[in-house]
Amino acid sequence: MKNRSVARTAAVVIATAVLCGIVPMIGVALRNSTVATIRETNILQALTVLPEGLRDCSTVLAYLFSTVGCVAIVSALAVVDSRITGSGRVVIRDVIVSVAPILYVTGVKWLVERPRPITSVGSGLPGDPSFPSGHTAAAVIVSVMMILIVRNFARSRFPDGEDDERANRRRVFLRRAIIGAVALVVAVACSRLLLGLHYPTDVIISATICPLISYAVWCVWNACESAEEW
Image (cartoon, rainbow, N blue to C red; front, top):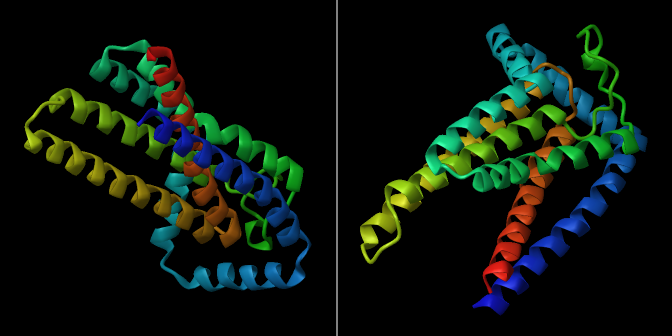
């Protein structure tokens, strides 16, 4: 069982590392592709016909998942996590697993330096790079933290035992948390497109690579804890 867990962790880490190496190359290719830029800009311009109310909601999400907003939300979730688990070590683990992708996303942004789409003109947004989407990454960070908190809550409320019903209830809690987390990431990603602040590929890449990074960090952390117990 231990060898299988180590093999799975190694596979996850290697696959994530390979994808992390490929993403900057994708970003450079998109930055240099006039065809891709035109096609994605056309998509953003087509979205301008949607109701104004959707853009108002998108603006709210933009504030909530800004750097300041994300820090505030994660801090509040960390307090909740602490109340549930009563363990500083668990809270630190959950925060590290959740926020791990932001370092990568920030690095890729300044490495690739893809300009913002022309639809962002007049938004008052600073001229930071577009690829990948930082707000989408922030949504992933918050979502992962929420999933881990729900997992901890379910495990505390339905502890391990011979009762299969407890395991089923834990799975239900976790499944609902994952569905809610995915919905949140999709909503924030779409809001960036509705505001015309990111190309579709910006949000797609961010929504894909960030959860993988968090999962890889989770696997490594668990492997280290298992090694200590061994």
